[in-house]
Image: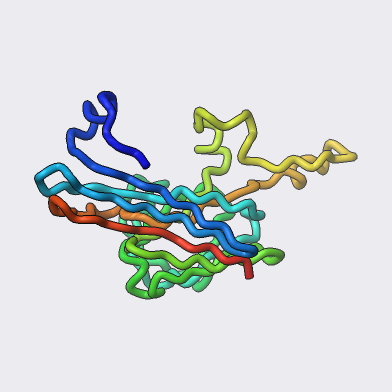
Length: 197
């Protein structure tokens, strides 16, 4: 349970209680946020569950996102419409799919060809698909050098470039393009369940 401290209150001057609940099952992980607004006033906030999937980014596809409007943050946040039937993340990707839940009902599939996941979201409208690759991966302050890559030792230096690949992607439910409003005394919940298929 997180509650205001002196340092937190300087950045967020509202009374609140925030719980982050993690539930593990044999082939499933659920993570949920629960927020109580005890501030005596309406608050607006955003939330995003930063979930890293250890998959081969070169072959990973995320569905269903076809036809959705997204903010392409790689191109400065311009709005585009997703045309692909399966969204790949082969290079630097930072896309905020607005109101993705309207198409999918909050259910998405993530697969790299060898492992597949079903993602079911609750309380969030947006879905962020992010692959930092080298462009952003090298700027992550708390990641070890080259930490976004898998490096298989190459017997021949000529082959080395083919044996490096991005070792994870992020598929993140959240409220990244909008704010959630919460009245005084009210509680909000949002979460996700990830199932290995």
